[in-house]
Amino acid sequence: MIPAAFDYVRAHSTDEAFALLQQHGADARVLAGGQSLIPAMRFRLARPAVLVDINPITALSAVTLDGALTLGATARDVAIERAPWIGETRWSLLHDVSRVVADPVVRQMATVVGSLCHNDPAGDWTTTALAARAEVVVRGATGERTVAIDDFLVDSFTTAVADGEMALAVRFPVPDDRTAGAYQKVERKVGDFATAAAAVQIALAKDGTVRQAGIALSAAGPCAVRVTAAEAALTGQKPTADAIRAAADAAEKASEPQADLRGSVEYKKHLAGVLVARGIRQALSRLGVQA
Amino acid sequence: MKVSVKINGVAYERDVEPRTLLAYFIREACGLTGTHVGCDTSSCGCCVVVLDGTTAVKSCTMLAAQADGHEILTVEGLAKGGALHPIQQAFWDNHGLQCGYCTPGMMLTSYAMLQHTPDPSEAEIREGLAGNLCRCTGYVNIVKAVRQAAGAMREPAAKA
Image 1 (cartoon, rainbow over the protein chains, first blue to last red):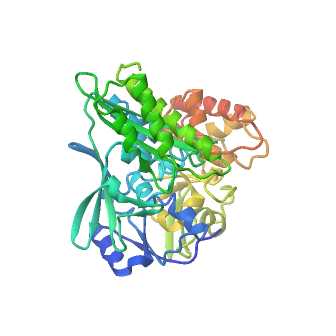
Image 2 (image 1 turned 60 degrees about the vertical axis):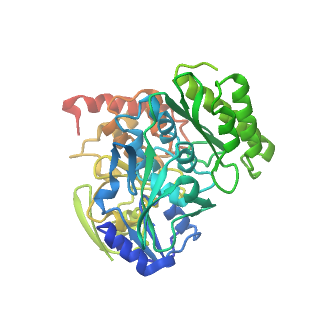
Image 3 (image 1 turned 135 degrees about the horizontal axis):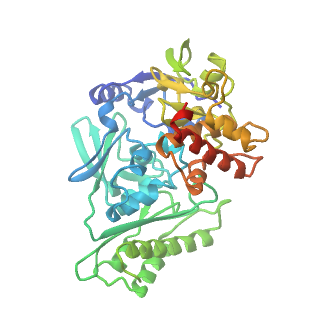
């Protein structure tokens, strides 16, 4: 399987990349890690006439941690997996997910921003970004804008990045030291799409109630989905077994999976609830709370 | 378009279509057929090569154009001066292969892994090789081989 022919252009600066994207509009695609785009092109599911390779733009590969954790458009998954701070409790959601995306070789090329832009319904980073309340920096004709992840993920394989635009980075807010997360994924084998997956991030207040909950599902519908009802079931509450059960029930209800070889609708919905409950318990136990 | 790469220390410059995948560039344009194509869909890891010394990549899922100006290590580049690389020796010693089709990818993935994790546990080896499929061995001897290779490569004298 060989991709359809295309013109290949290297961009050495974001200005150059942006100019090329503006020039070619819908005919152009950005090439970062290529771990979703190249397979899609090989299957002829994608046939861009022009590929704009942004890998030569060294500034875009940066991973910076100050007011926020910022991953540039060509920062590889493996940079998260091996980051010096990844063992900190506050980053436990990113820790978990960075070890289960695709397989360890694919992760050496794959990018987080690319995964968000691909927006596969069974993606891992989209779901994680929802739970962690990330935002994406997009460059458009009128300049740069910051898009909340909820608005960024528009529909299956569709994002807020319009033709001629490009995503420059994703920003994760730095969680406080009473925050932990977990990523729970069931897959048939390493590298397969998730049968179901749940991203959870829990921030506790000083009194032990839940200050903020981030709960999102993958492979549970046409797009990664935030389970607002599950978040509401926990927020402001002590994380009791009852509150966790309510959140899990809400996730099971919100899940709208499709039946396929990985499982039936009933099974996947059940799994969504189970994984959310497990994720909440794991996040809490990382904060020293048993529930 | 012109693509210039260094493969196993040797410079290759070839004129190829932009859609040429790195695996085919290595095999067909450069004639180095030790890099295998198995699934052709980024699943099996037979085509893994090492980019710039430390990054394992599935060469069926990278354009040759992206490798322009970079250095690539393939299985042909492991042995030095007629002596097997410690990874090759370990696969030999432990019978870490049967049909051998997946072996170049297994060895190159291990090579990159051992750059970052010189003393991996069995679990880390199994996790690190999770993107490489072997339909013959059941992996036990492959894991043994990587452990032996890691030990040999940590001894400075044996370092390739």
